[in-house]
Image (cartoon, rainbow, N blue to C red):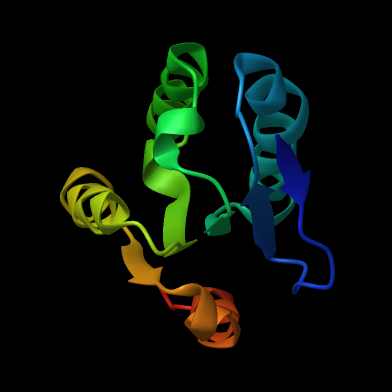
Length: 124
């Protein structure tokens, strides 16, 4: 399940993933929220807090995630991923190579730092 994280700056979208994440979660929570942020801000500052294993994302959810990344390729500004999973570090490193903008991994203990980092504005 995907849930919006409230109390973030207006230019940041925060999503918490718990349990199984499906295509429906992507289509009803993540995609419209990111689309609204792009319309409003023109770029994406994105905080993802993984309280579930990445293996709990269905194949359809991963497909929608890939489409989201490609659709907004030039809009990504900052991506902070909060997780204890080592595989997520690899994913974050891969994102750095695939998209313009910055991405960085954090642990759950570093959540406050992740929020500060993803909230920074860059003059690009």
